[in-house]
Length: 372
Image (tube, rainbow, N blue to C red; front, side, top):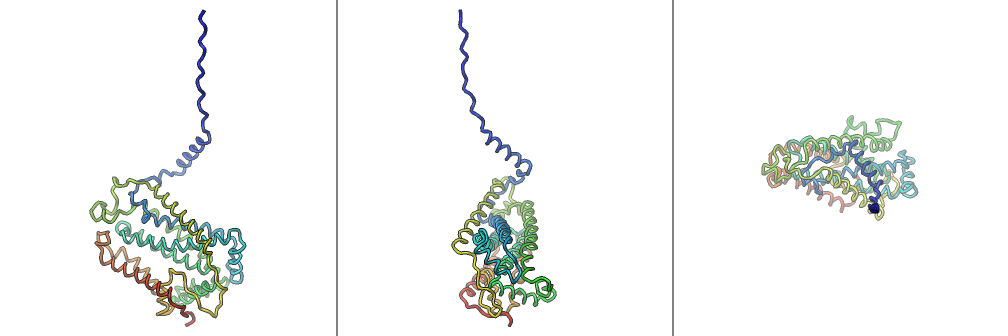
């Protein structure tokens, strides 16, 4: 009698990694609902290089400033009779106060540098030319907002340097007359100027920056990343746009470069903040004038040395007007620097002058300007 066959025991399937499956499912859900696929549109390979990522790194720097600024605001009191104690409390007693203030201070200084370098790169590659003239003007506006952030922030620490900076603000407001009323002490007697500068720093300037960033990113998306100058001069970028076959990279990779660079910026700022804490000078003394402004204002300080406080206003306005006029003056089809010799020499002369004047101020003694 035949025996029944013995059933073969098949190996049990490996248990599914439900955690990984759930994570992938959650990511797919977010990816689909948030429309993140819109960020994977193609861009040219040179978009994912450091020179073309400086603007994005600056943007991430602004995000770091917003986060650290929010934390500092929890302990800051802008009333003139209490502000000094509040800053000292932040520096010595508030939770993570000294570290966060150091990060905020150093990121602010680094962002000024990255924004300027971004502007230089855009000029050098003629990325302001058709069809991107409007975006250049938006970028100039962002540079102005960056400088305004730096100036108002330098006043808020309320030491001797801050006091002298505020006095410059008031004297320039007087020179402007009616146009400077908002920046003067006479605008209202119910709120001190320092409180109004603080309100400007934490409300008006962030609003302006947000609107300008939205416009900047929209125009970048609309017109695309600008072509390399040499390729454009060879006729490989009709109407200033990179042809579709050359869009071999993804904007999502560009975002990783941006946020990776921003993370490096924050880490460097934290290291600098630990080794070189954010400075806090002596309490203000109205009878003294013994400080110089932050380094990015040195070149304006030289004009003040030679021609008085009003020269700060006129030199600053002249520089801003020159930037605004760039896309309307340099209208040739060429984009390489060697094919734009006149504007290249002029731009180089301006850069050399700013650096040279800044070095002169750095090595020069403080000169009394206020109340003259």
